[in-house]
Length: 159
Image (cartoon, rainbow, N blue to C red; front, top):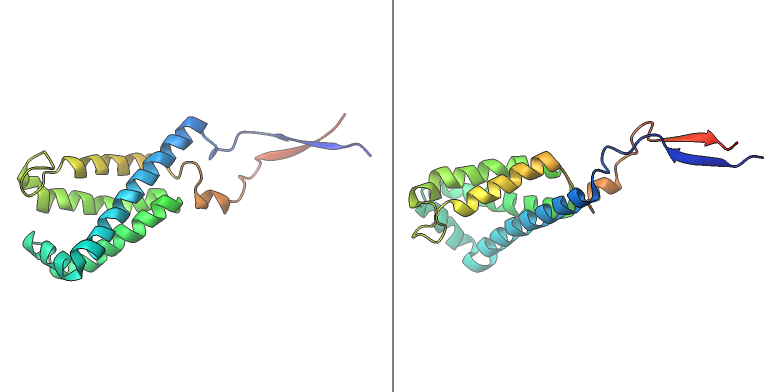
């Protein structure tokens, strides 16, 4: 009985350029770690009363504290794990833009200005937009559960 060989009919559209996939992973991990660190700082260092006070001092409604911190923590974890990266980065983008518009924008560009400027938040918004365009990158959990693209592999009989 002749042996069968399997050859790729076309490259997987999710395989991409390996260096680009690793660069995307680095962006994803950095942004996810930043979100988790900010959420944990608010929970563990400032505490809920301190975080609520911080929100109210900036003019934000106190009730917004809980969903904002939850979004940072959950969104950061999802980014690190590589689950729904495009959607998570897009969903967190309004929080960054809101922080620029309503909190940090009036304090100037440099983040170390009194009250904090908006340069860091603008940079994070650009990284978020890059991830919206790039997707999951290498080593994402979403990639483990993805079905192969139809027609990706075809069986060809050996001569």
